[in-house]
Image (cartoon, rainbow, N blue to C red; front, side, top):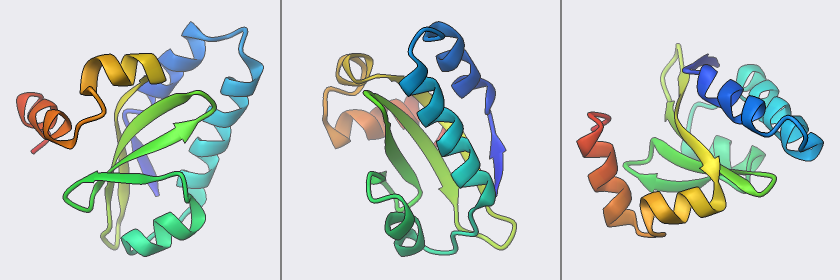
Length: 113
């Protein structure tokens, strides 16, 4: 898969350079996405059981170390994974309130849906 907005994960790495566990986990996530050929949500969740579908069968939160990242995965022949948001779990709770309705509103307000 092609990754769009990879710079969001790069920013997360730069902000957390001293956290080698996180940096390794982010690089592993990038590699797994780039090497994947997910055609269905089931393909994705079999390979990444930490993926939590939060909207429409295309938006997923992934756990990376103690951080979370929101990724739009397009299950098409030329599939793409677009990084939408990344941050710590505390940032996630502050932004999304652990609530799917808040996630949907955030996606709509930021023109993702």
